[in-house]
Image (tube, rainbow, N blue to C red; front, side):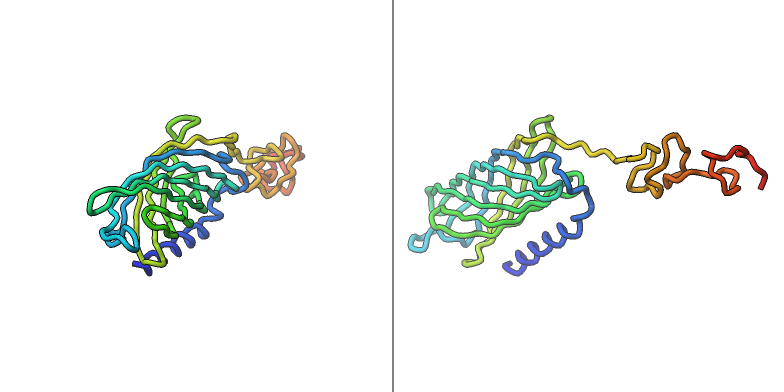
Length: 231
């Protein structure tokens, strides 16, 4: 399982890097966000309650608070605090918290985001976890997003594997950027495809942004006084 976790983390990194140029990354869709979510936390069946007490920790729930900042359209980071309440397998429960940071990669058009980071959990016993996951910010209102997220956690010291499911709301901050293709010479051909970027105003151009010569006589339409010269 430890090897599988490492392979999943590597796959996440590779996927992010191979898609890094798939979208415009100069400006983010929104600069930052704050969120609150309910979390279901599923613990490893063999995870002990503590180093001295008997029994194991069972599943539980928590309330998670997060703040994220987008550096570019693709990349972001966040800090997260979760108040956790985990059950004992032999009755009772234990409260604690989990804090940490994540690096996040948003796929093109924010279809999904991938994340990975480190968490410090203190419930019964303190432990440091590595985590990876996938989530999405769903548009439910202009200023509100629905958070859905699945994450896997691995304690490298004790080799435990936990999982969590999270649903909540996020409030974006900062102006949303609207991306419009640029046409510097206003010839109707976007700069990314314009092979003649300094075309004079009013000149008829082809699909590459260059002036046309309909009768193929070597004189461009814009200066051709005999535009229908026979071949």
